Each structure stands twice: as C-alpha cells, then as structure tokens.
Image 1 (cartoon, one colour):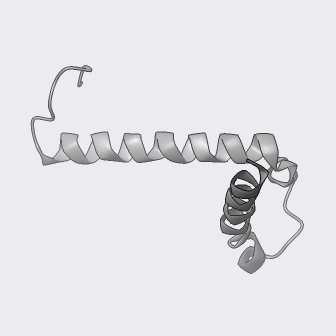
Image 2: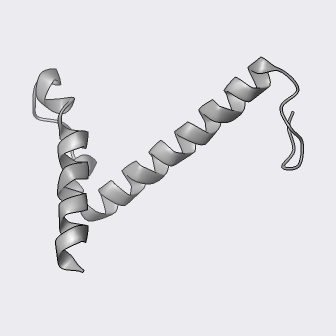
Length: 70
C-alpha cells in the first residue's frame, strides 16, 4: 500500500496510482455537473446512443455558462 510520500515501486503500482487519480477527477467532474445540471440526477429516458452524448454536451454547456457568466 502506498502512503502519500512513497513513490510507486513498480509498473503496477504506478498504473494503479494513475487509475485512482483519474477516477477521483471524473467523480469530481460529475459532482460539479450534478450540482449545476440536475438532469444527471434523473433516470435516463433516452436510448444508449443519446445517453453517451449527454455528459459531453453537459460539459460544453457548463463551460459555456462559466465563460459567459463571469
């Protein structure tokens, strides 16, 4: 198990560290989107092809609003 101050000892530990870091960033992004765009809190009513596009569209809307509301 890695502590905060240790470096990864091998490739597997490095991969695991990067994977956990990426997961944390993604969870944070979805948390921000859920707070601002409530559509993510509802059960999806759309087909899988549309559902796959929703997160990217919401990110674009979020970024647009942040850019033009400042």
